[in-house]
Image (cartoon, rainbow, N blue to C red; front, side, top):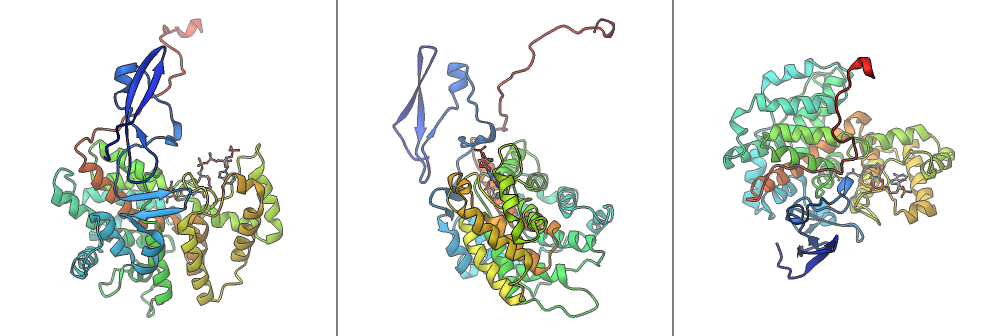
Length: 431
Ligand code: SDX
């Protein structure tokens, strides 16, 4: 933590408290309130944690005003154009870009752990065919702790490493199996001669009845989607993983908790919700009606795929994602896709509207990822599982970082209590 001799002075009921401050390498200074309750018998109040740093971290940095996203200091646009997902995984996990030898060893390790225990296939068969794939993923990932006992001891560095590789390697297999189960097709085993993204497309779209060749433009776009979703500071699902891990829960349980949180439409479920919104709009002439609803104070309706808690000018991932969307749609000859027409017109009208300008609302990463996935042939129900697959390395990296923190203690927020104080029980005949 960077040394900072500044202090924050707080005066409460005539008594003054000096609180230490810490300076980050990027972002706002922080006021250290760890001793405030003990000294002044007061809590701080910050529902939604809009002004609260819950931890220190060296993994990812976002500058919301500049629209900057750094992974271990490397800008996301450079990683998206020059790197690839497994190299970004190595960077997030170990802090530095790998040498050619380190990368080859890491990719070989991941590739050779992509199969899941054969008996886990039975888990899928316990779900209805129309179960949402996110429900399946929460269940199957949580159940991994029942099969991989030799990588659940969080106090053993080797077991933490094995669990990390297993989760990164097996998430595409589990996500693809959830998809195949939902469409009634047989599971497709991973192939070690394919790269990570191509393997995922193969497991999703190949069928035993015919040869399936992965289109390199689609696998490149898939890999880029994985990279753009890899990590994002202390977002809701990452904070969930950290809180679950603070109790000592095993890695599979923590990642299952992260998947559950990501499912929500305000978070990772936004890409599915965004496509469903575009389909509901249907034609460009209906866009004003939906924009009016999003602006109506008396209507809780929001434009899915717009806005962000941290980015207040643009989401740098959306900029890169938009380029991929154009490439994929040109390749697939669906640039005239009616959904894409609605998306492009909605973006144009929303960005020209003063409401969105003054509230700094713009397309986020989910606005374009859904369009690409739709064009690739994924059902909207698979959009968030793909987000979860990609974010697993971020969750794991943050999980490992927290476990290595000597100050780690169980997360246990307090509250502003507004309920009844002690009162005596009233017998039912007297109520
Ligand atoms: C992700 O945290 C992360 O990093 C998340 C993520 C990641 O990589 O992990 O980036 C992934 O979750 C991206 C966001 C995906 N969600 C959506 O697209 C859903 C739609 N967006 C909104 O739900 C909303 O913008 C949030 C949840 C993303 C952010 O909400 P905030 O920061 O809590 O902002 P807010 O709800 O306080 O809104 C501020 C104002 C409000 O108006 P006022 O009450 O001030 O009058 O902006 C309005 C809101 O009504 N507003 C919107 C809007 N989003 C905010 N109005 C219309 N449409 C929207 N989408």
